[in-house]
Amino acid sequence: MKPMLRLTSLILGGLLALGLSGQAQTPATAHAPDGGTTFHIQSIDIAPLTGAPFTATVTTEWTRTLADGSTATTRNHRTVARDSTGRIFQERRFFAPNGDTLPTPLSSLEYFDPVRHEFLSCIPQRKTCYASAYLRPQMDKMPAGVGGLEVCACASVPGKETTITHESLGQETIENLDAIGSREITTLPAGAIGNTNPQPIVKEFWYSPRLGINLVTKRFEPQAGAENFVVSGVSLDEPDPKIFEPPADYQIVREVVVKQAIPQAAR
Image 1 (cartoon, helix red, strand yellow):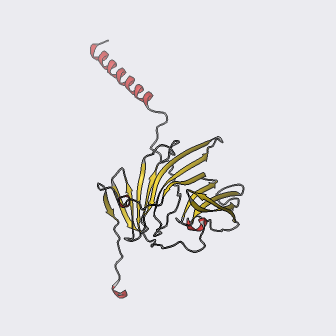
Image 2 (image 1 turned 60 degrees about the horizontal axis):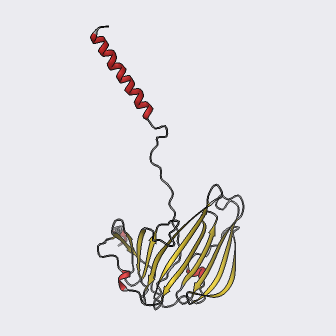
Image 3 (image 1 turned 90 degrees about the vertical axis):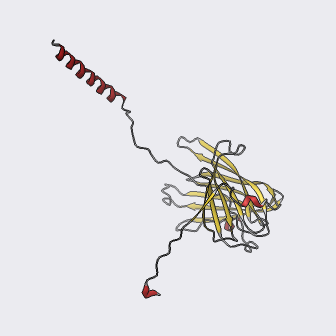
Protein backbone atom coordinates (compact mmCIF):
# COMPACT_ATOMS: atom_id res chain seq x y z
CA MET A 1 0.00 0.00 0.00
CA LYS A 2 1.27 3.43 -0.90
CA PRO A 3 2.09 5.74 2.07
CA MET A 4 -0.51 8.36 1.07
CA LEU A 5 -3.28 5.77 0.59
CA ARG A 6 -2.41 4.15 3.91
CA LEU A 7 -2.56 7.53 5.71
CA THR A 8 -5.96 8.27 4.19
CA SER A 9 -7.28 4.89 5.31
CA LEU A 10 -6.05 5.52 8.85
CA ILE A 11 -7.72 8.94 8.99
CA LEU A 12 -11.06 7.60 7.67
CA GLY A 13 -10.91 4.69 10.11
CA GLY A 14 -10.24 7.05 13.00
CA LEU A 15 -13.14 9.35 12.06
CA LEU A 16 -15.49 6.37 11.76
CA ALA A 17 -14.40 5.14 15.20
CA LEU A 18 -14.99 8.58 16.70
CA GLY A 19 -18.43 8.73 15.11
CA LEU A 20 -19.42 5.35 16.50
CA SER A 21 -18.04 6.33 19.90
CA GLY A 22 -20.09 9.55 19.89
CA GLN A 23 -23.25 7.64 19.02
CA ALA A 24 -22.67 5.17 21.85
CA GLN A 25 -22.40 8.01 24.40
CA THR A 26 -25.73 9.63 23.45
CA PRO A 27 -28.14 9.10 26.40
CA ALA A 28 -31.02 6.82 25.52
CA THR A 29 -33.40 8.83 27.73
CA ALA A 30 -32.55 12.36 26.56
CA HIS A 31 -35.41 14.84 26.99
CA ALA A 32 -36.13 18.50 27.62
CA PRO A 33 -36.61 19.70 31.24
CA ASP A 34 -40.01 18.87 32.70
CA GLY A 35 -42.21 21.03 34.90
CA GLY A 36 -43.09 19.32 38.15
CA THR A 37 -45.93 19.86 40.62
CA THR A 38 -46.33 22.62 43.20
CA PHE A 39 -48.71 22.47 46.17
CA HIS A 40 -49.94 25.37 48.29
CA ILE A 41 -51.66 24.69 51.59
CA GLN A 42 -53.78 27.38 53.20
CA SER A 43 -53.89 26.87 56.95
CA ILE A 44 -55.38 29.31 59.46
CA ASP A 45 -56.94 32.62 58.45
CA ILE A 46 -56.09 35.62 60.64
CA ALA A 47 -58.51 38.54 60.44
CA PRO A 48 -57.33 42.15 61.09
CA LEU A 49 -59.03 42.19 64.49
CA THR A 50 -58.10 45.14 66.71
CA GLY A 51 -57.53 44.86 70.45
CA ALA A 52 -56.64 41.16 70.26
CA PRO A 53 -52.85 40.93 69.95
CA PHE A 54 -51.04 37.60 70.02
CA THR A 55 -47.96 35.72 68.88
CA ALA A 56 -48.01 31.98 68.25
CA THR A 57 -46.54 29.05 66.37
CA VAL A 58 -48.54 27.19 63.73
CA THR A 59 -47.49 23.58 63.18
CA THR A 60 -48.71 21.85 60.02
CA GLU A 61 -48.72 18.10 59.34
CA TRP A 62 -49.53 16.93 55.83
CA THR A 63 -50.07 13.24 55.05
CA ARG A 64 -50.58 12.00 51.50
CA THR A 65 -51.41 8.50 50.30
CA LEU A 66 -49.00 7.32 47.61
CA ALA A 67 -49.76 5.17 44.56
CA ASP A 68 -48.59 1.96 46.27
CA GLY A 69 -50.88 2.56 49.27
CA SER A 70 -48.14 3.79 51.62
CA THR A 71 -48.14 7.30 53.08
CA ALA A 72 -45.76 10.25 53.12
CA THR A 73 -45.90 12.79 55.96
CA THR A 74 -44.17 16.15 55.96
CA ARG A 75 -44.36 19.01 58.45
CA ASN A 76 -43.37 22.57 59.15
CA HIS A 77 -43.79 25.15 61.89
CA ARG A 78 -43.88 28.91 61.52
CA THR A 79 -44.44 32.12 63.48
CA VAL A 80 -47.59 34.22 63.20
CA ALA A 81 -48.53 37.43 65.02
CA ARG A 82 -51.08 40.24 65.17
CA ASP A 83 -50.88 43.56 67.04
CA SER A 84 -53.62 45.69 68.61
CA THR A 85 -54.14 47.70 65.41
CA GLY A 86 -54.86 44.55 63.39
CA ARG A 87 -51.51 44.32 61.61
CA ILE A 88 -50.62 40.70 60.80
CA PHE A 89 -47.33 38.89 60.23
CA GLN A 90 -46.97 35.35 58.90
CA GLU A 91 -43.98 33.25 58.01
CA ARG A 92 -44.27 30.71 55.21
CA ARG A 93 -41.91 27.74 55.27
CA PHE A 94 -41.16 24.67 53.18
CA PHE A 95 -42.07 21.16 54.36
CA ALA A 96 -39.77 18.40 55.60
CA PRO A 97 -40.32 15.09 57.44
CA ASN A 98 -38.95 16.63 60.66
CA GLY A 99 -40.25 20.14 60.03
CA ASP A 100 -42.28 20.13 63.26
CA THR A 101 -39.12 20.11 65.38
CA LEU A 102 -36.47 21.67 63.10
CA PRO A 103 -36.89 24.97 61.22
CA THR A 104 -37.33 24.52 57.47
CA PRO A 105 -36.24 27.16 54.93
CA LEU A 106 -38.40 30.25 54.60
CA SER A 107 -40.40 30.51 51.38
CA SER A 108 -41.82 33.97 52.13
CA LEU A 109 -42.58 36.59 54.77
CA GLU A 110 -46.03 38.20 54.70
CA TYR A 111 -47.13 41.52 56.19
CA PHE A 112 -50.76 42.69 56.24
CA ASP A 113 -51.51 46.30 57.23
CA PRO A 114 -55.21 47.30 57.39
CA VAL A 115 -54.27 50.88 58.31
CA ARG A 116 -52.09 51.52 55.25
CA HIS A 117 -54.18 49.05 53.21
CA GLU A 118 -51.00 47.32 52.13
CA PHE A 119 -49.87 43.73 51.72
CA LEU A 120 -46.18 42.85 51.43
CA SER A 121 -45.06 39.46 50.17
CA CYS A 122 -41.32 39.16 50.72
CA ILE A 123 -39.03 36.57 49.11
CA PRO A 124 -36.01 35.92 51.38
CA GLN A 125 -33.88 34.49 48.55
CA ARG A 126 -34.22 37.78 46.66
CA LYS A 127 -34.46 40.09 49.71
CA THR A 128 -37.35 41.72 47.87
CA CYS A 129 -40.89 42.56 48.97
CA TYR A 130 -43.73 42.98 46.50
CA ALA A 131 -46.40 45.45 47.65
CA SER A 132 -50.06 45.30 46.69
CA ALA A 133 -53.38 46.49 48.07
CA TYR A 134 -54.85 44.90 51.21
CA LEU A 135 -58.59 45.47 51.14
CA ARG A 136 -59.74 43.89 54.40
CA PRO A 137 -60.67 46.68 56.85
CA GLN A 138 -59.88 46.76 60.57
CA MET A 139 -62.41 44.85 62.69
CA ASP A 140 -63.18 45.82 66.29
CA LYS A 141 -65.01 42.52 66.83
CA MET A 142 -65.83 39.34 65.01
CA PRO A 143 -69.34 39.21 63.50
CA ALA A 144 -71.96 37.91 65.92
CA GLY A 145 -72.60 34.20 65.67
CA VAL A 146 -69.62 33.48 63.47
CA GLY A 147 -67.98 30.14 64.19
CA GLY A 148 -64.88 28.42 62.90
CA LEU A 149 -66.41 27.36 59.59
CA GLU A 150 -67.36 30.86 58.45
CA VAL A 151 -64.55 32.95 59.89
CA CYS A 152 -61.84 30.98 58.09
CA ALA A 153 -63.78 31.20 54.81
CA CYS A 154 -63.32 27.46 54.43
CA ALA A 155 -66.92 26.31 54.72
CA SER A 156 -67.83 24.42 51.58
CA VAL A 157 -70.25 26.01 49.14
CA PRO A 158 -73.24 23.82 48.33
CA GLY A 159 -73.23 22.54 44.79
CA LYS A 160 -75.31 20.34 42.56
CA GLU A 161 -75.88 16.98 44.24
CA THR A 162 -73.36 17.92 46.95
CA THR A 163 -74.45 17.18 50.51
CA ILE A 164 -73.09 19.10 53.51
CA THR A 165 -73.65 18.27 57.16
CA HIS A 166 -72.55 20.18 60.27
CA GLU A 167 -72.00 18.91 63.78
CA SER A 168 -71.25 20.67 67.05
CA LEU A 169 -68.34 19.22 69.03
CA GLY A 170 -68.90 21.25 72.20
CA GLN A 171 -66.28 23.35 73.96
CA GLU A 172 -62.74 22.81 75.17
CA THR A 173 -59.89 24.81 76.63
CA ILE A 174 -56.88 25.02 74.29
CA GLU A 175 -53.80 27.12 75.12
CA ASN A 176 -55.77 28.55 78.07
CA LEU A 177 -58.37 29.86 75.63
CA ASP A 178 -62.02 28.84 75.25
CA ALA A 179 -62.52 26.98 71.98
CA ILE A 180 -65.72 25.99 70.15
CA GLY A 181 -65.59 22.75 68.17
CA SER A 182 -67.43 22.02 64.93
CA ARG A 183 -67.22 19.50 62.12
CA GLU A 184 -68.28 19.79 58.50
CA ILE A 185 -68.64 16.85 56.12
CA THR A 186 -69.08 17.54 52.43
CA THR A 187 -69.84 14.56 50.20
CA LEU A 188 -68.90 15.04 46.57
CA PRO A 189 -70.97 13.06 44.07
CA ALA A 190 -69.29 10.68 41.64
CA GLY A 191 -67.65 12.57 38.80
CA ALA A 192 -67.30 15.89 40.66
CA ILE A 193 -63.50 15.70 40.61
CA GLY A 194 -63.20 12.74 38.26
CA ASN A 195 -63.94 10.34 41.12
CA THR A 196 -65.75 7.09 40.41
CA ASN A 197 -67.42 6.92 43.86
CA PRO A 198 -68.85 9.59 46.21
CA GLN A 199 -66.02 11.16 48.22
CA PRO A 200 -66.18 12.88 51.64
CA ILE A 201 -64.32 16.05 52.59
CA VAL A 202 -64.09 16.25 56.37
CA LYS A 203 -63.15 19.45 58.23
CA GLU A 204 -62.90 19.89 61.98
CA PHE A 205 -62.33 23.24 63.70
CA TRP A 206 -61.64 24.43 67.23
CA TYR A 207 -62.34 28.15 67.12
CA SER A 208 -61.23 30.78 69.65
CA PRO A 209 -63.81 33.61 69.90
CA ARG A 210 -61.28 35.75 71.79
CA LEU A 211 -58.69 35.69 69.01
CA GLY A 212 -60.99 35.02 66.06
CA ILE A 213 -58.80 32.17 64.77
CA ASN A 214 -58.99 28.40 64.64
CA LEU A 215 -56.61 26.95 67.21
CA VAL A 216 -56.91 23.48 65.67
CA THR A 217 -57.94 22.60 62.12
CA LYS A 218 -58.15 19.07 60.73
CA ARG A 219 -58.94 18.49 57.08
CA PHE A 220 -59.21 15.41 54.93
CA GLU A 221 -59.64 15.83 51.19
CA PRO A 222 -59.44 13.02 48.61
CA GLN A 223 -56.98 14.90 46.40
CA ALA A 224 -54.73 16.49 49.04
CA GLY A 225 -54.83 13.93 51.84
CA ALA A 226 -54.93 14.73 55.56
CA GLU A 227 -53.89 18.19 56.79
CA ASN A 228 -53.64 19.09 60.48
CA PHE A 229 -52.91 22.61 61.78
CA VAL A 230 -52.24 23.33 65.47
CA VAL A 231 -51.67 26.75 67.04
CA SER A 232 -49.42 26.56 70.10
CA GLY A 233 -47.20 28.73 72.30
CA VAL A 234 -49.82 31.49 72.29
CA SER A 235 -48.74 34.76 73.94
CA LEU A 236 -51.38 37.45 74.41
CA ASP A 237 -48.79 40.19 74.98
CA GLU A 238 -48.33 42.96 72.46
CA PRO A 239 -45.78 41.74 69.88
CA ASP A 240 -42.57 43.62 69.18
CA PRO A 241 -43.46 46.26 66.52
CA LYS A 242 -40.36 45.27 64.53
CA ILE A 243 -41.97 41.94 63.59
CA PHE A 244 -44.47 43.82 61.40
CA GLU A 245 -41.79 45.44 59.24
CA PRO A 246 -39.61 43.70 56.62
CA PRO A 247 -35.87 43.39 57.32
CA ALA A 248 -34.00 46.63 56.71
CA ASP A 249 -31.95 45.20 53.82
CA TYR A 250 -35.04 44.17 51.81
CA GLN A 251 -36.13 46.34 48.89
CA ILE A 252 -39.83 47.03 48.29
CA VAL A 253 -41.27 46.85 44.79
CA ARG A 254 -44.70 48.42 44.47
CA GLU A 255 -47.15 47.23 41.87
CA VAL A 256 -47.82 49.54 38.97
CA VAL A 257 -51.52 50.13 38.34
CA VAL A 258 -52.21 51.04 34.73
CA LYS A 259 -55.56 52.79 34.23
CA GLN A 260 -57.27 52.84 30.87
CA ALA A 261 -57.67 56.25 29.29
CA ILE A 262 -61.21 57.62 29.33
CA PRO A 263 -62.50 58.34 25.81
CA GLN A 264 -63.25 61.99 25.08
CA ALA A 265 -66.93 61.26 24.45
CA ALA A 266 -67.30 59.68 27.88
CA ARG A 267 -65.89 62.65 29.81
